[in-house]
Image (cartoon, rainbow, N blue to C red):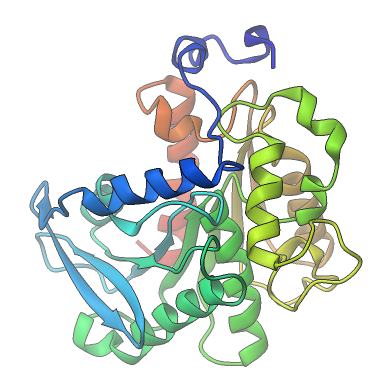
Length: 307
């Protein structure tokens, strides 16, 4: 991708940021090893961080210093379904907890390099069920929880919301999806390989989906809740916020999902950032376009959580 296609505020950062070669088994193994070796923090900016076993899944719970509002955010980290840990988003989750005075729960789900579908989505569902079961003890109102995530985590968030809606249990107050990985059929489009999308390209995308699904991307059929973008009927899903850059590999599938939600009567805000590649909100947090991006996201969270 030509650097000229990237927003001026972001160009310097992306000049020195390579795409993640997640199609390499060695890279995936080393990346996950390094993440495991990092020392986990117990607090950030007076936000307490604790680990819990959530019915088989591991979660990190971020508690703000002041008595919180009774609302919560269930967060799911990214990493293309192949790499990552909840702790890599400690700073972001602690910031949500402190800024909004809410409880934040982040899921450590099993990764597809060793645990294909349905391991990751099952772990996310276990975390949701644990949060609901322990809501009173955590000071959380069960109907004031938003499900959110970034990249692959946003795709898992979308799948989780679909599964919860179908279960008929207490519903989430909304979903907030950052640059979501929603549809394996994008990975099957080999002509996208030559575009050279920044940070997350289509070769890595294909590797992630293939590992997760246990089959080549773009097959005629996939298991229920494996690929959220393939769900035909989106009626009844909760209010949604989707944030995406228009030079992100996932832009087309994100825009399509937002349009389909709206067509099914679901209130959906699509926040598009011109010239923003994948993960810009993490890579260049001080850019004015990043701040505007989070202002939109915070506005959605405040409104839907009644803050």
